[in-house]
Image (cartoon, rainbow, N blue to C red; front, top):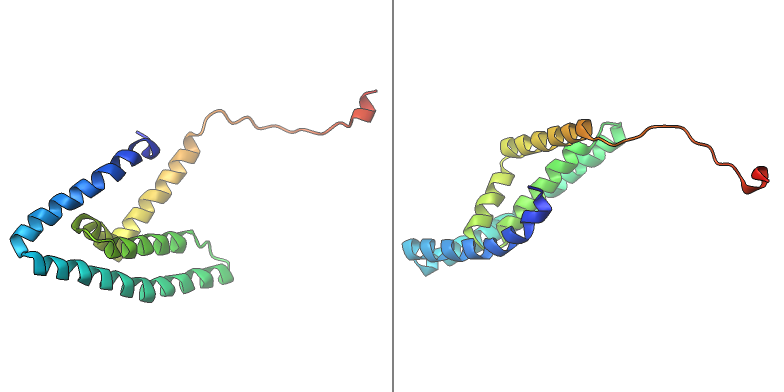
Length: 142
């Protein structure tokens, strides 16, 4: 099923999952520790975005200057930034996904899967008609 079809459902389910997790974890840890965890991951996300995000951005710029393809670095930076933003957003589920995206090994795995998916989709494209053409002006037809 294409992502654009299930995306609205995911957007509606995310708050419900987060509320459920807040109730469950808050019941186990207590309100104070739950709030502290939310604030702690938000601060960690901000620090992460400032430190590692700029470092990856510089690496991508260096790859461009040296003539290397920057796609891997750009995807790495994008996923790292997404992980940082998810850590800033309050919630245990978004924190878990954000932490997974911060781990370099898992980020590399996700990027390799994305790149192989792009290659596979390009290989499967049907309906492409290749050919040559030239433009005739209206004056020549008369």
